[in-house]
Length: 180
Image (cartoon, rainbow, N blue to C red):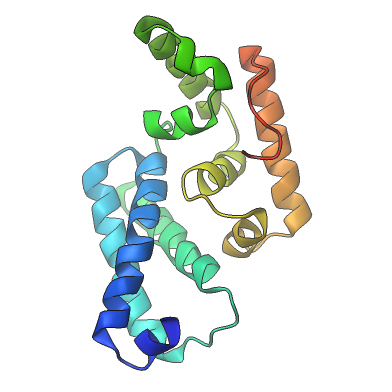
C-alpha cells in the first residue's frame, strides 16, 4: 500500500491517511488538549508527507517517520504560538490508569483521573512523550525510539521511570511496567 501511494495511487494514499490519521490526531490532541490545533497539525503532517513521499525510501520505518513529522509539526506550532503543551488529555489518562478503575464510581474515577492528570503534568516532557506514543498512538517501543531518534534503552528507561513516578505519586499498583 505504501509503495502504491509513493507511485501516485490516490486510493492507496487515501487508505494510508485513513489508517494513520486517527492515531496521529489522538497523539497530538493528547499533548496539546486542543482539538482544533490537533486537527490543523494532523493536516499539516499529511501535507508534509504527501510532498516528501516521492523521496521516501521504505525501510520499514514509515510509522516512525510519520510520527516524527507530526511531533515536529506540533513542536513548531507550539513555539510559534509561544506556549508549551498543556496537561494530558483525560482519554490518555484513562489508557494508563490503574486497572481497577472500571469498578470505581463516577466521582472516584473523576478524582483519580484528576490526580493522574496532575501527576502526569509533573513528569518531564520527554517521559510524557513516551507515554503518549506508547499508550495513545499504540506504538511499539522500537517505533517510539525511531520517532524520537533515541536509543531503545533510553525510551524503555523513560517509560519505566514515568510509570514508577506515577505509581509513587499516586500509590497505584495497577499500571503495567511493560506498557500494557
